[in-house]
Length: 124
Image (tube, rainbow, N blue to C red; front, top):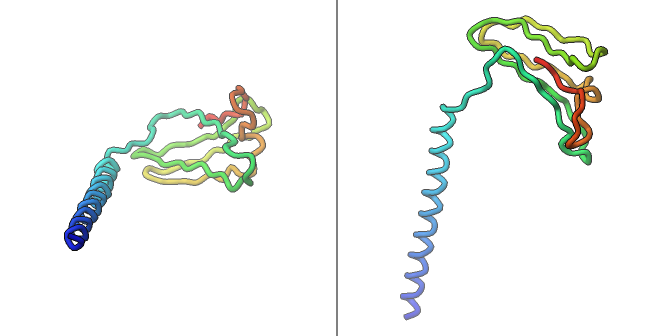
């Protein structure tokens, strides 16, 4: 009888392991199939407000990643509510990617107080 229980429990273990394997494979295949369906925002104007997600942690570098489509463009990053913020302008060729380092503007960009309307939004 003892041998039968060991055989049964190893079969159960095998079934459980196979279920876990198929769940992981199913999840992986779903992610791969949906990755081709992902789309970024495409438009000519964007508003962005940077939240202060965690005050207990130190702030690191802040980058704005911009990717062009099939057309070249002149991209301007401004803060209309802050006349002291000098707009950043760049000319980008078609299909180009650029990273804009906004770390030096952290105090002007980060919304410190939750559930409060502040004039720190960027117009891109």
